[in-house]
Length: 160
Image 1 (cartoon, helix red, strand yellow):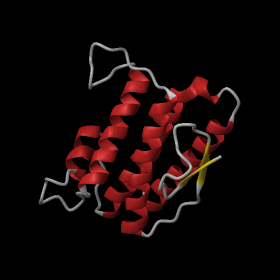
Image 2: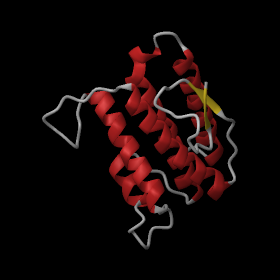
Image 3: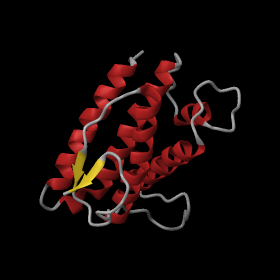
């Protein structure tokens, strides 16, 4: 089982990649990968949280159940805003990876810059939770995304 620090280390590496890919010219070609990268940072953050409780799941359904704030007996449940951020980020990633939108199954899903901005906002919520709950530290992640407003209250993401 990977340790808390193993997951945090991988999350930081993925954050570094996210920062680097958004800076590249023509990065708009890779909005799908930017959204997916945000999700995989979140996967490692959530797995770090679960590892503290001695839990390791292999399926997204099991992880979702373990995090669900309505599961009163779950030692690994998270606040509702964190749970919703993770769920929405998972759905955005699924949309970008599989061209499928759960909200509108008849519409082909694609990733655009507005989806990257949503993914970053959701990821910021999860980062705040892990920092506060587990005293993990993260450097600021500089990103280029026109849909992120400079005055937004993001803890970890700074606009280039």
